[in-house]
Amino acid sequence: MTLGKVVGTVWATRKDEQLIGMKLQIVQQVDLDLTLKDSFVVAVDSVGAGVGEIVLYATGSSARQTELTRNKPVDAVITAIVDKLDVPGTPALTEAVEA
Image (cartoon, rainbow, N blue to C red; front, side, top):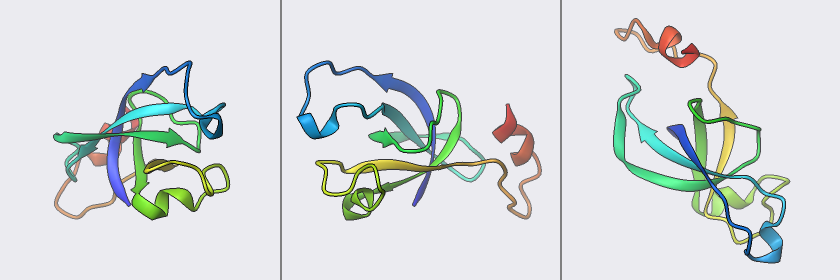
């Protein structure tokens, strides 16, 4: 799994029937200090994440292991919303995640 921040939503009215009803989020990868990296993915949201939240996401075949995405044409899925990061030597992560 990878840490990321939800930075936007993808709206696609016309899509594969297997994706109907799935929320698609743009997730930008972050470092441990929550600095945004250049890479991003479009991920199916399986946990109800919103823009601005720090999340964990899985890619590749692991993305097709949730109840929502099983056997679907999905390459990335948001699997958790992060409440807190406890990383020694990085003091302000709880406040940054909650902001």
